Image (cartoon, rainbow, N blue to C red; front, side, top):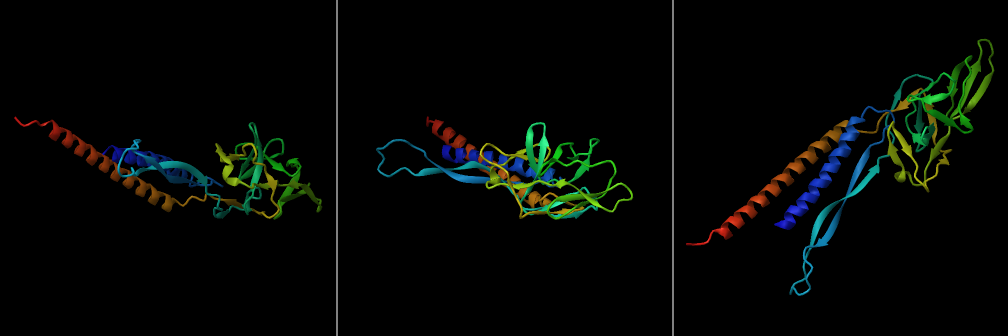
Amino acid sequence: MENTLLVALSRQMSLERQIDIISNNVANVNTTGFKADKSLFEEYLKSGAHEDNFSVRDRRVSFVQDHGTYHDLSSGPNELTKNPLDVAIDGKAFFAVQTSGGERYTRDGSFQINAQGQLVTTGGDVVQGANGPLVFQPTDRDINIAKDGTITVREGTTTQTDSIRGKLRLVSFDAPQRLQKEGRNFFSAPAGVNPIPDPKSSVNQGYVEKSNVNAVTEMSRMIEVMRTYQNVSALMQQQSDLRKTAIQSLADVPA
């Protein structure tokens, strides 16, 4: 009975972790460029006894181990905004952004221009171009962002000549699952994970990539996990009742 309780407890711990992950996904269903997380579990085998003098070899007990999580990096649906500063990536790349904590990476292409004329995120972090920050002039108009990320503008009110303001820096990673999530919808790259230029990806101006979280699927998973948790709790209660009954029966000495 002890093994049953321990195995059930390991399952409950993994289910709690899964609930946390699903809850975070649901909370970000409307976050632009958000990437959902998924949970990984594996079997952990451990012998219940440690003596060598049994006639029959002791069987291992199968526990549930929370192995970790992984990022679902599939693309979310694109939403038309017609805002010239909104950009959605077509491919596996990320935008490079300079923050107070260093360079970070995001799929959120909802940009704006700050007081210094720099292209920034909604949180004010500077979007990086191939040669540094992308800076606009006060007289710039008709901003155009090509498929390869090149940004051109018309200067002044009379000129018909296009001027280049830079090119969006799109990067990808050989091991994207090693990226670490941070607040404000950013990813950071740990030591040994270096960004590389991604010429295969392109951008679509006037669109933003929505979250890749499927609300219906996540809510269904939440209900399934909650029911499983309740079933495991019921099993643990049954085992506890059986143990209590056994102890009471053994303690009942005939007169």
